[in-house]
Image 1 (cartoon, rainbow, N blue to C red):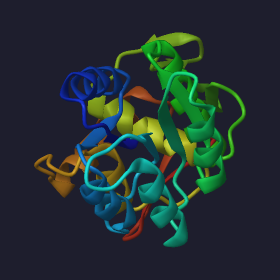
Image 2: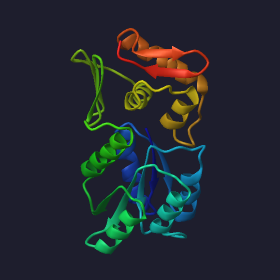
Image 3: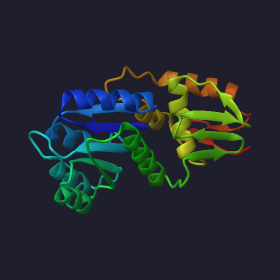
Image 4: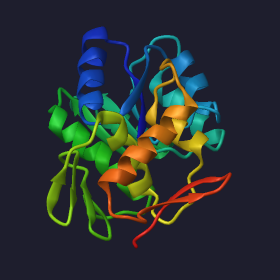
Length: 221
């Protein structure tokens, strides 16, 4: 899953980036409202969620959010606001935010709220995603098959995580590339095939289908 982090305070941005990447997300970072606006409306750079600070230079976060929604961008947005500033919370929700968190916050709460937003956006109610014997626990970034823990690399996990959030749906190779890598990552489309091949060796036979020339589909065999 790919997240856009919009935060102008370098220390907070670095801490959030580290925590998000440790939780299995590909993270793009923007430090001002103008850049964030253009990143968010670029349809070639899809994001599964956004963490948006409202107090930004050049263009405030509330304006950025309004412009995204006016442009038809529907990705879930978690806004960060100053403590006890209820006016910002109300304005943010009215502008199209999906949730909010007040500073200072616990990192675990931010990650939990983000997981919930992404789950709801893809139609899942539970923190555990299930496909046959395969269970992906989004809370702990852990995968089991028939109750047995599975060891995955970070990119194998990202590929499976995206497929598990979209079961039964045709997912193209380009979709996977856009959602498992940050923008500045050196992307190689052939590596997706490598990750899929490795996952097939670790998962029950038939869980990942190949639709020739189109992409992949996660199914319950």
